[in-house]
Amino acid sequence: MSSILDNRPELRREVEQVAEAAGYLWQKGWAERNGGNITVNVTDAVDDEIRSMLPIGQPVAIGVTLPNLKGCYFYCKGTNRRMRDLARWPMENGSIIRITDDCAHYEIIADAPVKPTSELPSHLSVHNYLIGKGSNYKASLHTHPIELVAMSHNPEFLKKDVLTNLLWSMIPETKAFCPRGLGIVPYMLPSSVELADATIAALADDYDVVMWEKHGVFAVGPDIMEAFDMVDTLTKSAIIYRDARAMGFDPTGMSQEQMKEISTVFKLPK
Ligand code: 2HA
Ligand code: ZN
Image (cartoon, rainbow, N blue to C red; front, top):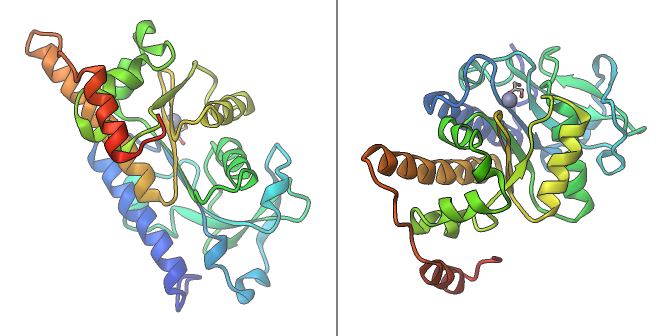
């Protein structure tokens, strides 16, 4: 079967990176059934031939109007599709969509009529926000990391930057590679516009990764691997914390001075 990826190495690479990351999400146990979703802004890899492709089916309302997304293209995981299937067959479990000129609808252009993720309002609103602030971030990732979700069941950890500091203090890499920490969004109905708005507010508060209480995380990055790596790094810290507690003691954690030193040496924003 022919694919939009044929003879388009740049676009193929974008989609193959998503497939690789989807495999990791499944292997880590973060992607039960159809859990999680990924969207990547692939507009830079789109050529004139793609721009003139006819859509598959009719335009669909996004539910919000997103003025910065006019003429943008996204690879999106399909709704109800499994990450473990996407890992092997990304164009059968996801699709490439175009945002129409009214900025309020999308149309699927390839390869098959796979309806995009249920969290599309959150994802596209975030991309709209990122473009609006001139960010080079192209990828957004929502996933269900076990240990981080478990920690979100403790009200003490939901106070601003309590979890950020705890996770940073478990191992130096976490602050170095997730230097904005972990924002917190209180529990809201999955897929809702309220959740999308609260996510953007948290990202605007200068986080790259935010926790959706008792649900999962939402991460943004320049590409899908960078977004995945930040969630992976934070989860590593959560596991170290859990293991110390399971061994019967409270981990000491790095001191504030030690963490400040990391910020100075790595020239970190916080
Ligand atoms: O797409 O994880 O939050 C499945 C989900 C929704
Ligand atoms: Zn979810």
